[in-house]
Length: 476
Image 1 (cartoon, rainbow, N blue to C red):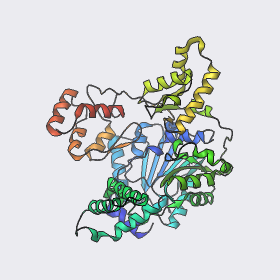
Image 2: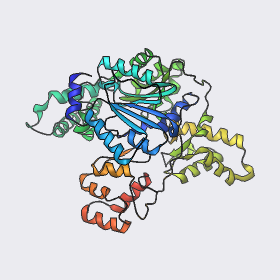
Image 3: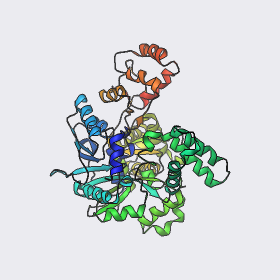
Image 4: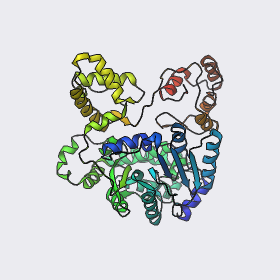
């Protein structure tokens, strides 16, 4: 790593973040849909995270999957000490953190089913990029899945120039002003012009304001921020015999900014999926990717069909679908069962069994499987439904004694974000953090209501509690 990067990580703590797109339950489903025949199930896998920081991504995974093994490495000894301490305090026996430079660390004889490097590739030197991909390749099991995130061109180009101007224009605000003041000034100035370019620029500065200083110093304002064309990443990975599979979530294979019919106009590129993806980046202005790779010699089922969706669990992401999106009685009944299960992720097979009972002798297994699989694959591709390996069952009604998991209580007491059942981080205003810490199982709901009224009078406690319950925060 370059000295400025080392200095950044020694002087500042990397924000505590979990990455839902890099959850092994999601990676497993996406890899199978991309043709990997038998990706490892998250409940019995080995997972390595390169650049794990203080373990906010790995620790919840280790708590969820006690029979799997997790390893995290990072060159910040402070972050590794923090991660190791938390694991010890919680009593996690299936996770190891190591202070190491990725150019010097080597795995033991056992390889990993999943290797994750989130927030690394675009933020390290060219030589470190090669070392990273080399480590990914040597650490990955023969049928393993690697997940790499990076900033992309051409979409990141305007953001790159916008960030450069932030560094160049501190004189626009009084000396000693907070970074947010400068970003607000730049956003306001850009928004004066009615042009599309000015609107885009203003939106970038507003987005930077939302991120805040703690994130920006590691992203837009980092010592190294090297956006890459998709084809560059493919070429770099190919040098280490790594093969591109897909994006980590199905909807990202067609950027949400683009209409599905876009692919109709690009049919001529069907024989060159790499060029197709680079073209989609151009058309969408996509700024970031989270991509999956496997070994070049990994067996891929080129005849993979929508039927693979029937082997996973599903959860509804888009509750209000247009009527024309639900075609036929079978799909209508399946969708109704999926809606009833929300916010849980439930086995598609289990939901189909419920549908069969409802239809009785009108249920045709072959016909139903074909219709439901076809709809489910399309729904997952469009982001209406998420496919996952394994159930995640949530009780949306808050319990009488709301209690966070030991890990989330540990996070809350350290004023860190807590992580929900689907691996999304949840941040709270400082004035509400005291109520989060009170969710330790020592108070009944009515006691918590009184506590919140006294310590956080602006908090609408009951709706807030229901929201937390629907995200799976409370222990059963």
